[in-house]
Image (cartoon, rainbow, N blue to C red; front, top):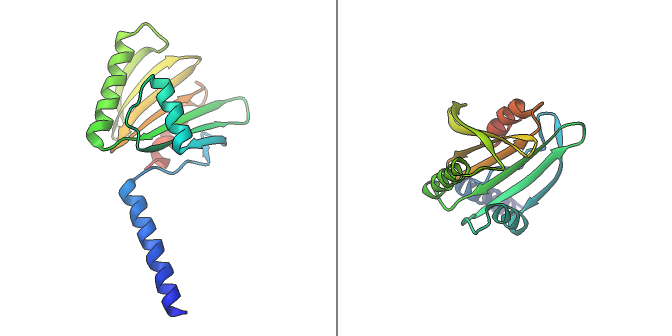
Length: 159
């Protein structure tokens, strides 16, 4: 029995250590009071993110989570890049594309919030925020009524 307990503890430790090494954030169960409606992970999430980008972005892992149940809605797109340099490059490319385009995103702004460089834009009837934390790139699309709260919660829950 003791040997089985030690094996189980080692498996948990190794699994937890692998989780820390990979660093993929956990899907929050709610954002700004909006419950998780559904989530795509793995290949489904990769396909959805790459469809939005129109190309393969070298996403190692991630998720696309849809929130809402009341009058407001939010979506979280989280992609885990191969490394921090790749994530930085992805954010720089998104910023350059938004700046040089005439839509669908306007009013691009850069600010420092929560110790991160956070970009915001308006488009498609929502407020959009995106930022990089380590090798994770996060894009949040939220209705204006919950956008600031959703950003604060996304930053704190995606550590």
